[in-house]
Length: 177
Ligand SMILES: [Fe+2]
Ligand SMILES: [Fe+2]
Figure 1 (cartoon, rainbow, N blue to C red):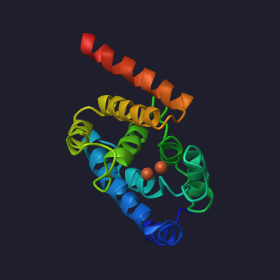
Figure 2 (figure 1 turned 90 degrees about the vertical axis):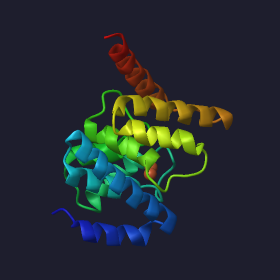
Figure 3 (figure 1 turned 45 degrees about the vertical axis):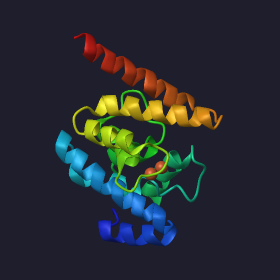
Figure 4 (figure 1 turned 90 degrees about the horizontal axis):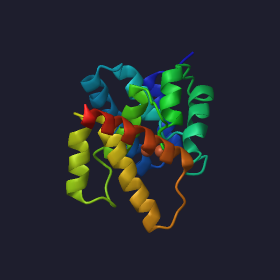
């Protein structure tokens, strides 16, 4: 049986550190608003947002999506494949994401507690664009992520590149129509 939302929050608070819990709540609220905007089930968005980083303390940066999906199922009792998939792909994205997957990917990046490496005006633009063009926002986020990783001379995951190519193609198709 699926764990109730309250129990999930309680359990999460015990295993993730306070700053990450704050981020988690920011992602959850943002995901619910985006879901309402795009006609996606807000309860699914809430659960996916709450649990998107549940694997973060247990796995590497790149692996925590897959590990999180496994924990969401085994520890938090989430059976819904759409929710599990949104957790699984929230770091790299994937070509052809579902709306819920896109929402969690974007919410993770634009939530109100997200600070630091981006200039405020860029973050503001991303937040605005997210509510009018989700696909373009995915491209913009990956653009920024790649620039950041290049500046740190860190390797870029192949899955993220595939995601970028797919969404770049999708929005350029829109532009020529
Ligand atoms: Fe994450
Ligand atoms: Fe996150």
